Length: 499
Ligand SMILES: Cc1ncc(COP(=O)(O)O)c(C=O)c1O
Image 1: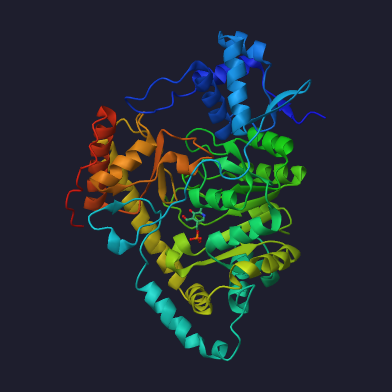
Image 2 (image 1 turned 135 degrees about the vertical axis):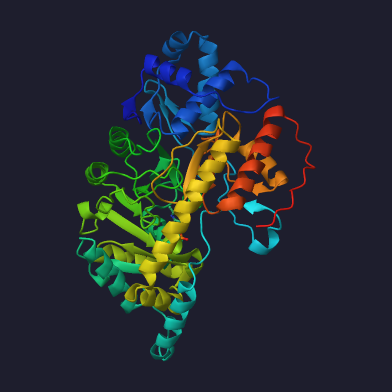
């Protein structure tokens, strides 16, 4: 039986290959042989989700004609893709696109540097803000006052403290989705939630559909779990989710899980509208795919005029198809390490069992802290501080970038914490490398893609503002000049910077 579920014709593939941006390899790089350029082009189309996985590619002769190249070139490109795991072929059935299992390229996650080791470096690696004081201190004091009754217990709450489960359930109910505490599990950050979900649903070799680009650390977590990531390209700009494409991927690749960040997507900042949400749930339900919705950024709406659509789980309130993941990290502070999952009670029971071997439970004191903050006005006041700070940072960062790097392109998101920037035709990896030498750390685009996609991008979080944002932009401009001219000696010293 053939393994392909859709087909891409020679004229359409040739059109996509021609319209592809040239891979911005940077000056000095030699042009690759024709077969390699063709293989890279097809690989990128698959990696960015523009050609779906399990799509039959045209016969060698047809593609050669459409591209006006020799059949040998196409044959060599197909052979290279087969060797790299991006193509499978069977005599008589043709060749179809695939994604390699495991972790073929060293696409690391984002490792924040310890603040004390930063020196004069401006760290734009991590999209997280400092604690919204005085609320952290007040929350922890409130938690300490409530600790004594728990001190007499074993302290082992694998599903979370009952009080916090109830609190989180009530918050969903107030957002219009009736929820019982049995539908909530408290986790160690959103990462802990998604780790448990992968453990339960996505064994080694299982497919997971992901937005392309998506959040680097979750992609890495999934790779390390042995999943095969099936990228689905985001539409240009902030339009976000291309539903015909999602439907096709979910139907054809039949992934076990799909992972989306519908609220102020990391890294693009896109916000899914209500119709996109409804359709995503519908497509997942029809395909038998579990839809994991990461709401980590959902409280970071920065522009008052932006209407928040209903949560994705409003279209599956029972929680059999939609597993919602939440976190205190962006709304409050990443140092709390508190996250949660909302799902059907039986899914929650299985997740509790699945997380047991990872961390058994989440620290009691921090859970009490979040419960205290949510019970008092602390949470809402802290979120308001967050929004104000992020809005100011965003506007200052945007102004600094426009001044220093007018050819860098990005959309200004209405929420979240990140700008997804096309870096004027420069290689994001080179910028990241040279940036470190001139005193600014930025993650390159490929960290947010599946295997090498988005080489021409960097992600800039608006975690700094004012003079620090200006200095960051001027260091980025210095890095861009060095990358453009190819003159990087490796000895550039970061300028002293006092924030
Ligand atoms: C979309 C998204 N999900 C998850 C996380 C990690 O969340 P946590 O700190 O709760 O583990 C982040 C942090 O940047 C994020 O942006």
